[in-house]
Each structure stands twice: as C-alpha cells, then as structure tokens.
Length: 125
Image (cartoon, rainbow, N blue to C red):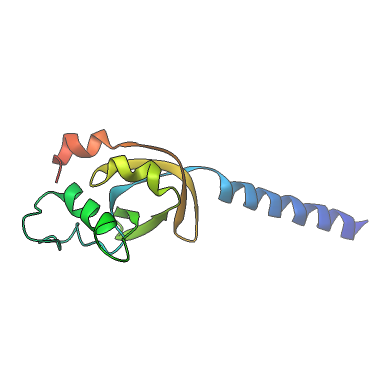
C-alpha cells in the first residue's frame, strides 16, 4: 500500500512538472537574424543598408545559406530560435512580445505583437 501511495505521489509530481513546462510564457526581445549581424554596432550588412529591418531581410533572403529569424533579448543576451518563420517575418527588426512555449531555446510561437512599451520608453532603434 505504501509503494502505491508513493507511486501515485511521484506520478502526480511528474504530471505537474510536465504541465508547468508546457504552459505558455511571454518572451520579449527583437526579431533579428540568427547571427545577430543587425543588432551589432555598426550593423554588418552591405553598403547602403542603414535600417535594421532591411539588414535582417538581407541576411534572410539574399545570402546563401539564408539566415533564420530569431528573438534576441538584449537584456539577458539570450537568443531564441523561432518555430514559425513566416509568422514572425512581418515583425523583422521590431521589438516584440512573443507568447509561446519554449523547449531547448526554441519558442513555439502562439502569439506575437509589437512591444509598445519599448517604443514609448526608448524609441525604435
């Protein structure tokens, strides 16, 4: 009987841990290229490209192999891979808030929106 109770308690703990790990979280940062070429100062892009969004699009579409979009959190210096590249493309170069679940530094994106607070406080950079 004791083993049964301990087994049930262990199973309950494991299920709780699994469910907690899969619950959506919010992540803030900037959509940029996976090599962080466009968040550096100066930006690493071809001559004539001065805007961050143009820089990211250059690395994603005109370089072989193409760079993937990532979420870069400058505050923690953390880079997250993003599962749905098409969903995040309209936000290239923008500071965003992403809702989703993370596994091994990859976010399964369920929602994305512009981080209005970042632009109120700092302006677009």
